[in-house]
Image (cartoon, rainbow, N blue to C red; front, side, top):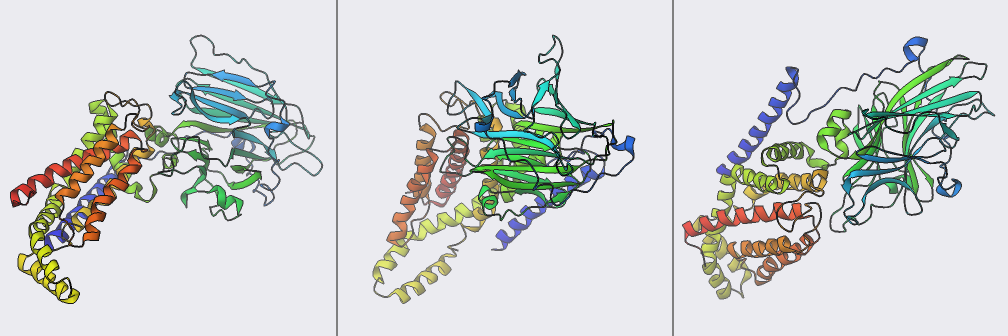
Length: 553
């Protein structure tokens, strides 16, 4: 027992050293090793400094006054939609509000339709997923341009030869004395879209506009999501005080969504397995955050931002960014503080991030995600070698005295109380702790669960080959070879473990690996490879210890 306590202390001590090193890196002005963060890009809001005025506070009615969602039934079938293609994105902007109504990720194949790319955003009968902006706060009787207002392209829509960026400029008609000019800046090799709003005041008086940025999505799960493991789909917000907060569609439906409603920093996002969209506003500025139901099975998450007052015949320019793409951890870390949290590791993030960092380093050396998974499991088994040895030795001793236990149980089967006393006597005489094999393994469980979530959440596994028949580590094994091997190794582990004295428990010990293995036939190949690698290494170590103790059958 003292050895076990000592081991736990060493694990805690080692992890504390990792955390201290990370903080030492920060203290010396270097990038953290495991938990990197970045400062918001210093994107100035033109007009704020020039006017010298303070932004108007967000009114309580701001979110309530947002326009009702323009559904596909109200839109003229994209007759005037504009399609633009970069090397990583194919985008469609609607004539109404210059809203982004479709985003196809050209570097990511659809797992269920390999001949097609992933369509993240869309506005069709099957799916609704949009990015919209507009102005609110107009005086009574007036309406300023919103995502329902017609807008006209007044710039080129083609990349010029030799250029890596394209500027799309849309203008609205004057509404309520205000014109809105929306400019998108697209960069090749980038999933980030620069979005500039230019508010032109022609109303004859000073105006105090508020701008909304929102993401609209239906409440359906992504196509083909597994029923054997669950990933989050829905809105999320990030604030400086409460950090990352997920919002369930069902909570919005019941008006029970609990998240911080006001913040000076942060983002709003719409998240699903492997992919996300997010509105990123870099300047520290008051904003109201909201999540609401728009229509039948349509939900939005967004922010309302108070803007400085705009004098008549003046204009105000405001910059923001829209991220549309995969949850690549290093990419997200460098875009905005806390954006990497859309790649959700749950409550084990503190373990998962270092494990992902190590996995990424191994991939840099090996160049294959499958072999990197195997190498990471090997390193973990080496790190926990002594703990596993203690567990397997305890199991080996239990296996050695098992015949004596079985004989005693048969002899005293009519006297349960005497049987229990005799069993404890045997344990004392043989110096065996029946729980000695559990605690060393229990200490390791959080690490392996964290690695499970790393592999399940990492978009890098999509379409990543391993060997032979495994062409996609994020898809199930097409020939079920890995799940069958996993089942066989689980049964072999059961054979190596001591047989429980209770016949019912003994049968359950054989049944559980079979029942548990059924799920692995539907799990991504990368997850099964990780578990199989762990099983094989565990069997090798347990076999060696059992042989040393002379308890092999």
